[in-house]
Length: 180
Image 1: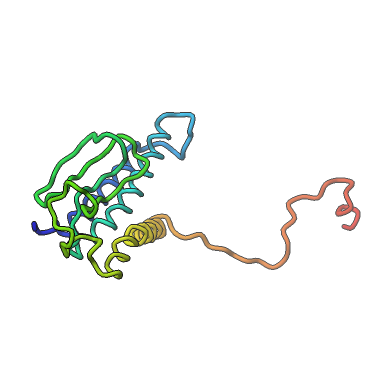
Image 2 (image 1 turned 90 degrees about the vertical axis):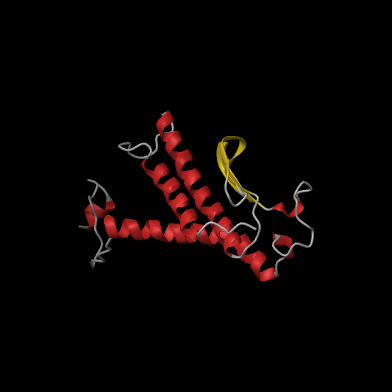
């Protein structure tokens, strides 16, 4: 089998997609769902989250030597598709509401023997669990990195606890005014 792409390649792809989603429409403040640009921003962020998630599954599978047949961001017909030197079909699809990493385990058209040790179904339980949970782990790491970037660039809110109770105003004629 062909050598898997280095993890740096997958990380670069994921980072590029996240940066594209974050900076595709600069200068717009917040989401206003009455405007198409805000919907595009929301879909871009969702696509970035999906890309990170699926890259987690993909990277773990490739690092363990598990065969992968497809890596897709989105569903529906492919907008862009390319088969890499490793035999994996990489695609960006029309509906950006999910994605998937496909394994040739149950594909009847696959050219692999059913007992091929590189198929996911033939791997030990811990390796299968690692591949399955790697998507969630990638999202947790990405969320931590986003929080770290925000904390280092914007800062962290400070909470100053002061003694007493702040009363912004007292209504005229109220019990509070009568009590002083």
